[in-house]
Length: 157
Image (tube, rainbow, N blue to C red; front, top):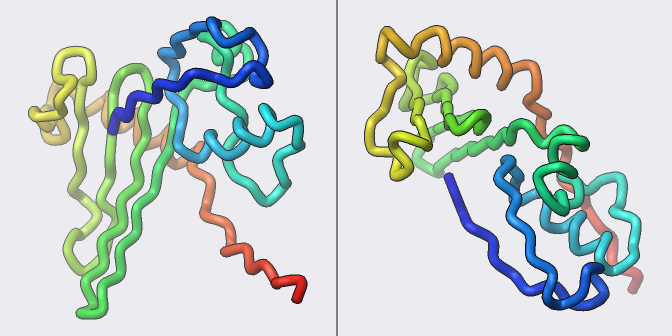
């Protein structure tokens, strides 16, 4: 999923209000909270997932912004379970449907974001893309961070 982020940083973000940058490397929504902490001059808490957004592509490359992994788990009251794991890397998006009540674990989606930016042609079963799909799935397994336990905050009163 591509969600453009356009913002005008406050002067406290550094670089002045006229600073512009475009980062083409993949970043995730989890990177927003640590970014805001950094702008505010606050160290992101250890329990917080993600890391501050890169300033530009050079910063992204230096800090290892090569891929983004995403999970989506749905458990409905009727017993329906859907579990998705996604990696975005090298202008490809690869999603594997984990076993659940709807999928058996062999299904998925693979899209070339350069040739198919609207993600309309699923290449998952394309024999010519099988090696790429398998490579992305290995990368996903090697770099997927299991979800943390929910943080339960206690009110001070």
